[in-house]
Length: 122
Image (cartoon, rainbow, N blue to C red; front, side):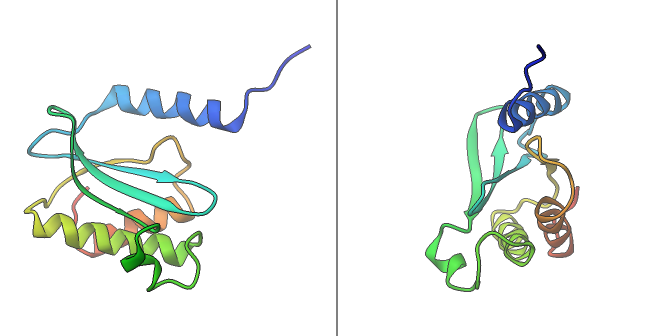
Protein backbone atom coordinates (compact mmCIF):
# COMPACT_ATOMS: atom_id res chain seq x y z
CA UNK A 1 0.00 0.00 0.00
CA UNK A 2 1.32 3.40 -0.98
CA UNK A 3 0.96 6.09 1.64
CA UNK A 4 0.40 9.65 0.49
CA UNK A 5 2.40 12.45 2.10
CA UNK A 6 0.52 15.35 3.60
CA UNK A 7 0.42 18.69 1.77
CA UNK A 8 2.53 20.26 4.53
CA UNK A 9 5.27 17.64 4.14
CA UNK A 10 5.33 18.16 0.37
CA UNK A 11 5.48 21.96 0.76
CA UNK A 12 8.30 21.81 3.31
CA UNK A 13 10.31 19.51 1.03
CA UNK A 14 9.80 21.90 -1.91
CA UNK A 15 10.84 24.81 0.29
CA UNK A 16 14.06 23.07 1.25
CA UNK A 17 14.87 22.43 -2.42
CA UNK A 18 14.25 26.10 -3.18
CA UNK A 19 16.34 27.23 -0.19
CA UNK A 20 19.29 25.11 -1.34
CA UNK A 21 19.40 27.14 -4.57
CA UNK A 22 19.72 30.60 -3.02
CA UNK A 23 19.99 32.57 0.20
CA UNK A 24 19.68 36.19 1.15
CA UNK A 25 22.75 38.38 1.52
CA UNK A 26 23.25 41.87 2.92
CA UNK A 27 23.22 43.30 -0.62
CA UNK A 28 20.26 41.21 -1.78
CA UNK A 29 18.18 39.82 1.10
CA UNK A 30 15.49 37.14 0.78
CA UNK A 31 11.76 37.97 0.67
CA UNK A 32 10.19 34.95 2.37
CA UNK A 33 6.44 34.37 2.12
CA UNK A 34 4.28 32.12 4.29
CA UNK A 35 0.58 31.58 3.74
CA UNK A 36 -1.73 30.00 6.28
CA UNK A 37 -5.46 29.42 5.95
CA UNK A 38 -6.28 32.72 7.65
CA UNK A 39 -3.28 35.01 7.20
CA UNK A 40 -0.19 35.82 5.13
CA UNK A 41 3.26 36.69 6.39
CA UNK A 42 6.19 38.29 4.56
CA UNK A 43 9.73 38.83 5.85
CA UNK A 44 12.88 40.21 4.32
CA UNK A 45 15.78 38.23 5.76
CA UNK A 46 19.58 38.54 5.67
CA UNK A 47 20.66 34.89 5.83
CA UNK A 48 24.37 35.63 6.35
CA UNK A 49 23.60 37.00 9.83
CA UNK A 50 20.21 35.37 10.33
CA UNK A 51 18.34 38.65 10.93
CA UNK A 52 14.89 39.67 9.82
CA UNK A 53 15.29 43.16 8.38
CA UNK A 54 11.62 43.93 7.58
CA UNK A 55 8.41 42.06 8.26
CA UNK A 56 4.70 42.48 7.66
CA UNK A 57 1.67 40.27 8.10
CA UNK A 58 -2.10 40.42 7.97
CA UNK A 59 -2.15 39.71 11.71
CA UNK A 60 -0.95 43.27 12.46
CA UNK A 61 -3.78 45.58 13.47
CA UNK A 62 -2.52 48.37 11.18
CA UNK A 63 -2.80 46.10 8.14
CA UNK A 64 -5.87 44.07 9.09
CA UNK A 65 -7.88 47.23 9.80
CA UNK A 66 -7.44 48.22 6.13
CA UNK A 67 -8.70 44.85 4.89
CA UNK A 68 -12.13 43.32 4.71
CA UNK A 69 -10.70 39.75 4.85
CA UNK A 70 -7.16 38.65 5.67
CA UNK A 71 -7.03 35.49 3.54
CA UNK A 72 -7.82 36.59 -0.01
CA UNK A 73 -5.89 37.86 -3.04
CA UNK A 74 -6.64 41.52 -2.26
CA UNK A 75 -5.12 41.12 1.22
CA UNK A 76 -2.03 39.51 -0.31
CA UNK A 77 -1.65 42.37 -2.78
CA UNK A 78 -1.98 44.95 0.00
CA UNK A 79 0.61 43.06 2.06
CA UNK A 80 2.97 43.16 -0.93
CA UNK A 81 2.75 46.94 -1.17
CA UNK A 82 3.26 47.32 2.61
CA UNK A 83 6.37 45.11 2.68
CA UNK A 84 7.82 46.95 -0.32
CA UNK A 85 7.28 50.36 1.30
CA UNK A 86 8.83 49.21 4.58
CA UNK A 87 11.80 47.75 2.70
CA UNK A 88 12.39 50.97 0.79
CA UNK A 89 12.32 52.92 4.06
CA UNK A 90 15.19 50.69 5.23
CA UNK A 91 17.05 51.22 1.93
CA UNK A 92 16.36 47.78 0.44
CA UNK A 93 15.75 47.88 -3.31
CA UNK A 94 16.51 44.36 -4.62
CA UNK A 95 15.55 41.04 -3.04
CA UNK A 96 15.46 37.33 -3.83
CA UNK A 97 11.89 35.97 -3.82
CA UNK A 98 11.30 32.85 -1.72
CA UNK A 99 7.82 31.50 -2.35
CA UNK A 100 8.16 29.12 0.59
CA UNK A 101 7.30 25.97 -1.34
CA UNK A 102 3.91 27.38 -2.32
CA UNK A 103 2.83 27.35 -5.96
CA UNK A 104 3.37 30.73 -7.66
CA UNK A 105 -0.27 31.57 -8.28
CA UNK A 106 -3.13 33.25 -6.48
CA UNK A 107 -2.13 34.91 -3.21
CA UNK A 108 1.62 34.31 -3.53
CA UNK A 109 1.70 35.72 -7.06
CA UNK A 110 -0.45 38.70 -6.03
CA UNK A 111 1.93 39.54 -3.19
CA UNK A 112 4.95 39.30 -5.50
CA UNK A 113 3.39 41.42 -8.26
CA UNK A 114 2.27 44.10 -5.79
CA UNK A 115 5.75 44.24 -4.26
CA UNK A 116 7.26 44.65 -7.74
CA UNK A 117 4.84 47.44 -8.61
CA UNK A 118 5.62 49.19 -5.31
CA UNK A 119 9.33 49.30 -6.17
CA UNK A 120 11.06 46.08 -5.11
CA UNK A 121 13.19 44.40 -7.77
CA UNK A 122 13.36 40.61 -8.12
